[in-house]
Amino acid sequence: MQPPVETREVWLRGPLSTMPPLLQPIAHALLQAREEVSTLMHDFPDQLLWERPANVASVGYHLQHLAGVLDRLFTYARQEALSPDQLAFLASEGKPGESPLSVQELVNLFTEQVEKALAQLRLTDEQALTEIRGVGRAQLPSTLIGLLTHAAEHTMRHVGQLSVTVRVITV
Image (cartoon, rainbow, N blue to C red; front, side, top):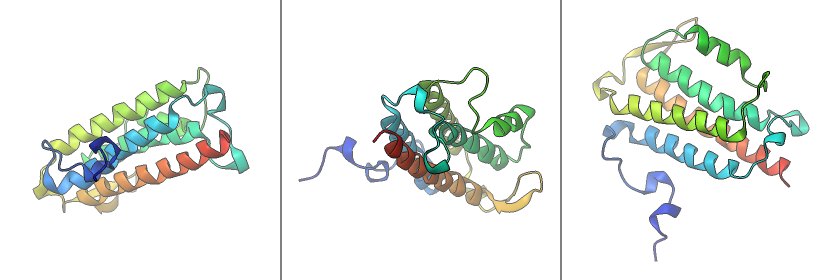
């Protein structure tokens, strides 16, 4: 007997009708990350956001970084430089700031960034996937598919770290 569709990981639910075929795995990973973050952060207390058990990165850092890194990598994928706002966000990652965002606000920020990334993926020409893209101020060489794939795997890596940190803090 097969489990209900909603209990399957996103990649096992079938193709996304509006997503170019070669970009399906990237979209699946981002959707999976969004679901896992939502589940992990359900009822997570705001006062624990910046706790650093064993001096590891805080839950707040991971939530900020998840949104920020997607934004930055997809900016490079569009062959654009980071804006002053993006650079300021990067500098603020890992810090609660003067008026810290709540858990729900940070989750919403990540969710919005996933939606923007998915919209960009839908418009991505598969013929351009092997084109060179520069990364960072040094414009280190990558390809469009390399950037997009790294965005997905980096996102999932931080979701895994977030998962462990949440479990340690809430034990």
